[in-house]
Length: 99
Image 1 (tube, one colour):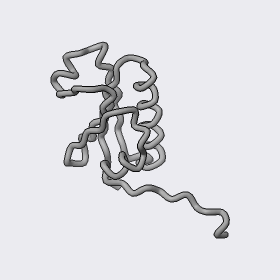
Image 2: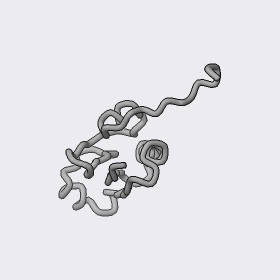
Image 3: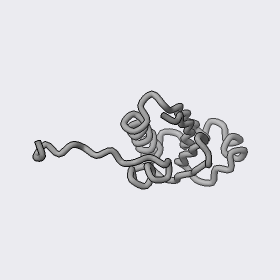
Image 4: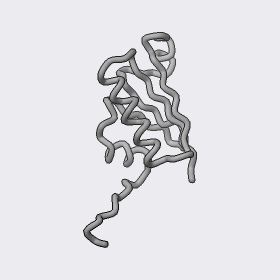
């Protein structure tokens, strides 16, 4: 499986930042188990990091690896959009009525 390197830029503990952290961690655990590195960067503690990374809004998720780089802005609640942008397929939950 391909290893993913992700960086999530947030601003403090705002509700949107907190939701983004929870949503990205959940997505990674469900769709990239044992094949990702996630770094959460609080740009309120070091604004220079945001400038160097050309972050214009937060929260912003940056997929650094595998190429190409992709950026997502918001609370990361649109799982299908994130999965598509990350090049991952949506996992289907088994339908118990089919058993």
